[in-house]
Image (cartoon, rainbow, N blue to C red; front, side):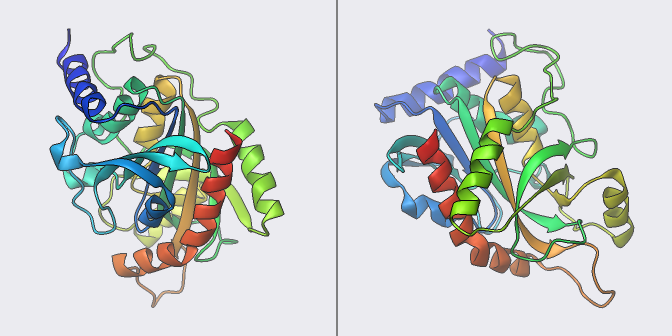
Length: 273
């Protein structure tokens, strides 16, 4: 047995020893978007620091707990806080919890993040459904030996985000008067916000938003055979007036203000699954 499979077995055994329940839906909450956790009827909440082989969140806005509970009448696993490559973790460590969710029986994964708007039609506070991504600026978490029990050596990425779930999300948004954007998310390493020239490059490449998470989680989820739905909260604008700068505090505030819309959207999507 490889080191990775041994670690996954130890992690899942630890969690299953504390939780006597199953859930087929997983949710990962991004920067400033942790309040969805309060909508969940929590059965068990485990600090990341207690879980064998789990990284620990080091970024403000990420509380760092694995939660099992009920949302919209469905059992869900929720990561309140995620990990990033820029924190010093490897791409494999960033995506490790997704593999743990797979081992716990998760079939559908919902992702959220805070992102910079590149599409000039976007404004701060918009929600953008991710219908595709550009991962060329990040490290692929599948590098190295492939574990066939987790997925194929060369996974197809032609539909990284489930079209059926995107269609459902649009219908939910329309019935609740939520203005939803849709576009391509570009993943970068961070932790710096992009230069003006980099924002322009991403725009030319076809990116509508840019952020420091999500794509590595998505790649591993697809590798494991999960269906994935993801939404970005546009918390700042990359192509902007010359005198304006971006701060993490502003990103968190914008995410907080958009959170009620995202919470409603996720609750209704879970209800449909």
